[in-house]
Image (tube, rainbow, N blue to C red):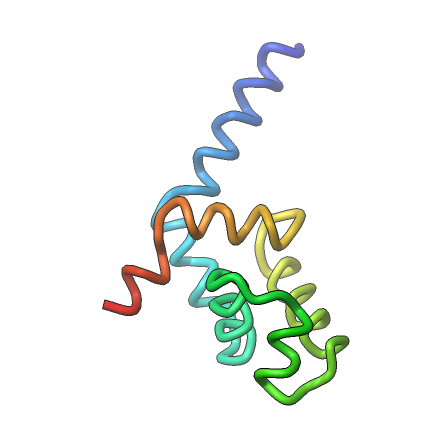
Length: 94
């Protein structure tokens, strides 16, 4: 039923933005994946990250794909938005 699907989709999105869910995402990441995700959170694009880390853009994109595969997000923009809503890296940096 459409109304049940809407409720499930809404609850799924709420779960994705919960603090514990997002922390669980971060602990699954390798150090390189974590740094790339933090750079994206800080507003850098793939090209800027590749220049900063002295790696090819395809390496950065591969890391981004692995980050998404380890989690239940469909795009990096969606994941970064969820992290920004809870200011997750601001909490970690303190």
